[in-house]
Length: 159
Image 1 (cartoon, one colour):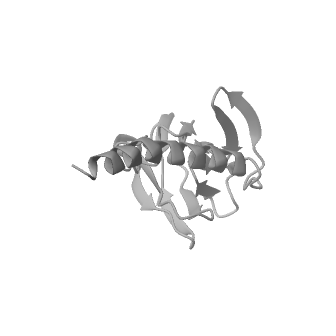
Image 2 (cartoon, one colour):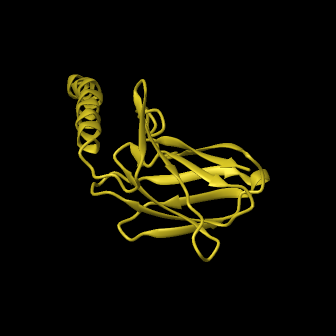
Image 3 (cartoon, helix red, strand yellow):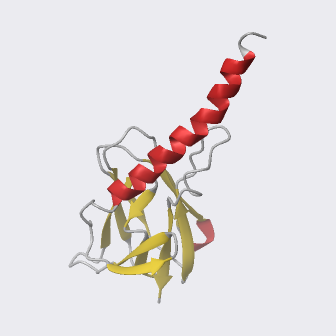
């Protein structure tokens, strides 16, 4: 019983500490140099950084993505249907673990990759036009998920 006040105080203060840290991370994300040449669009809480993949001489569309504290850069990627894609994904500085998940097996896009300092290459060929959500599915206990904090985006496959 003597620890009850201590436990209650921790339960009240922890969410406040994580909220402050999350806001600082979002502000820090604004200073990160863009990986792509994005066209910025403001969509309320989420700032969209759009990247249109270009088909290389070898016939492959390549995109570099950085995942950091509750963001993907770019977070809106446009690719061509039936053309191979290589996503090179790496994690920005920080201690929070992140991943990138896209679950659209009918469209040929289905992967889950943990982000790390070393870049990881994900290869796929989209087979259907459409918009497919990419997100970080990490979540700690009763706190907001990384997706709820803004770590999501879109892969759009166009004809």
